[in-house]
Image 1 (cartoon, rainbow, N blue to C red):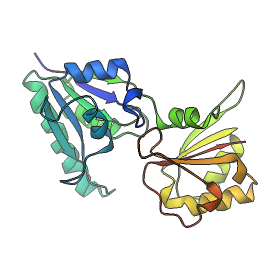
Image 2 (tube, helix red, strand yellow):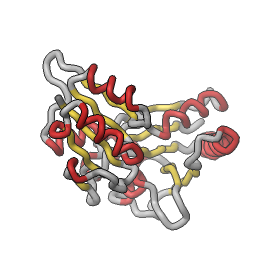
Image 3 (cartoon, rainbow, N blue to C red):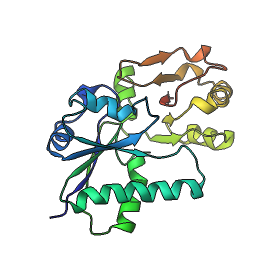
Length: 233
């Protein structure tokens, strides 16, 4: 029988925020797959897996996804990853692909799932939702994302001043993901809209490396990739 591919959200950083179902799927899976970084470093999601499973406890499959937007570089790697997963599934082994947060919210698993559906439509796929960093940040900061008729937006931060401004003007609360590269732009925008005091910035929320920043001291700061900003008007 063909194995099943599970997209497993392992939460925002604190291993205790992995759901019971996610843990069960990882425990039952024959193979744990994960996005692979450098030879020496471990991915964020794999570190959370290490809290529950020894490295040699079950087979692990590291899949390399280059940090580039060049299709000529990316597409062969995506195909290679799909082929590696299919080899396990075709042999009857269940594969749990782990991702931080939720598998269907700005996750590597989204594109992997699409490639699998195109190349191996017969492969069974199941998604196990996880707690996102947006939810975790709200809890950590005791900051409601939305109440009553309020609206909330989750926005990938980018170098587009007017688009970021429009998001803030249209919603009561905005969670900006991946703010590191455009932090100065966002700070300028917050000052223009007089929202600097309404913003919070947090890195690797709920993990042992969590940092809650003083927003007013972030100009020119070098932030890690897993940094988000919550603005609640």
